[in-house]
Length: 61
Image 1 (cartoon, rainbow, N blue to C red):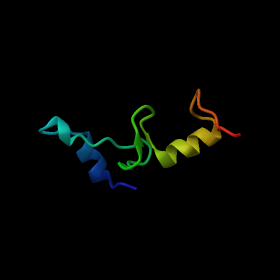
Image 2 (cartoon, rainbow, N blue to C red):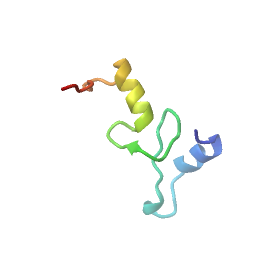
Image 3 (tube, rainbow, N blue to C red):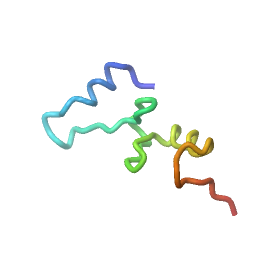
Image 4 (cartoon, rainbow, N blue to C red):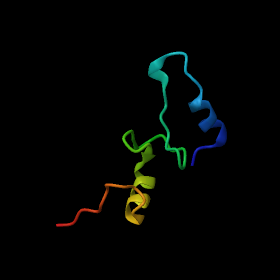
């Protein structure tokens, strides 16, 4: 979990565009981030298994 200071710092506009850090809006994690959903891999999996993300279903074969 990211601290509140880290989350606030990442929301500020950086001096250079290459310094943007994208974070999960739920927990603030920056690694394993999926742009399409705005979530980290852990939060994505939890929400997908609960059926909270429309259009996403668990695959099985």
